[in-house]
Length: 251
Image (cartoon, rainbow, N blue to C red; front, side, top):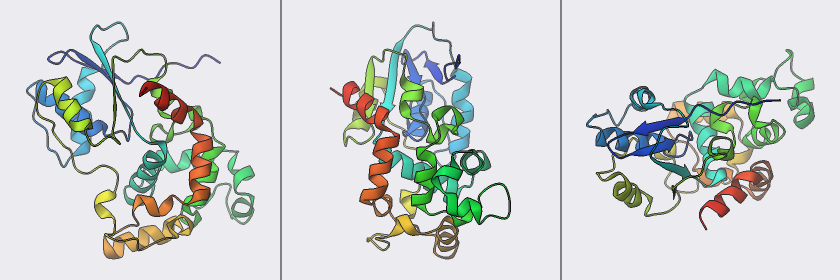
């Protein structure tokens, strides 16, 4: 099957940078910084505005300029997408790509068989259930926030690769762009995390319980609370191509 390349390349002429957009990889901050270099100010609390303004800079593969890619630890990225797009800011396109996929009958047979409809009730899934379901779904059938980073990065020779997990990445971005970094609101849902390890078994909490807890307290377990050894093992297997690609890109 001929799968088209993702339409995710943006060109910012003032910095002469072609940016490969990868969702959940601090893309709002990167785009806001590049927009600022173009003389465009953004509302740092409005992620949607940043994306709307940046899309005007979409370009073709033949556009000249240095190509910038930004990578992130796959496990942290996955939890960020789960909390942001499933728990806090429910995006139907994200969860429906999971619950209606045929492979969920293999990964979650008990939940499927006990469902009164042809699809799963997202509220009943735990984080581990969600990871197990995603593990069997190919990138082509996943919403963009959950696809492998390799899906977006492959096929381009990047001149610069930054890692969000590096404490110096914002300074590197500023040097590369030639201007100040414009930090858009904290990414994912880390700003909602409890200051201590309040939920050591967060990976077993249902999405419904997580949502209710967030509505009552405005807080969620920290990302690390979801990453039990079992969850990490599943994520590492599912996103093996990302771990390999990132290791190669950063060496």
